[in-house]
Image 1 (tube, one colour):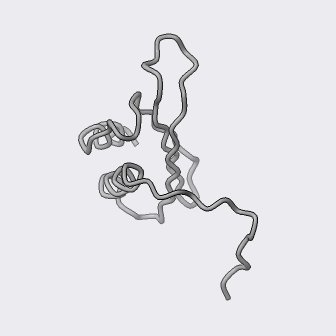
Image 2: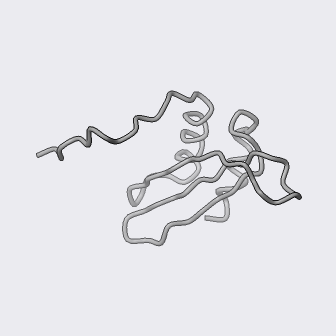
Length: 89
């Protein structure tokens, strides 16, 4: 039985850059055990930061959540950036 949908949950806007990053991350990490990703873009408060940065949370069943930071806006991230960031997980 499917869970009851939350009518108050904010539906994420379509974002082609986020979709591309998700695909690259899933390809780099595989899906065993099942993988859940959250991808967010934030404004870094550190003066040494270039401004926007992208944070990815990698969640796998039975494992601690891992965070990956790429110091670029989503639209600037390339597949090689994602592969480089994910190689340590």
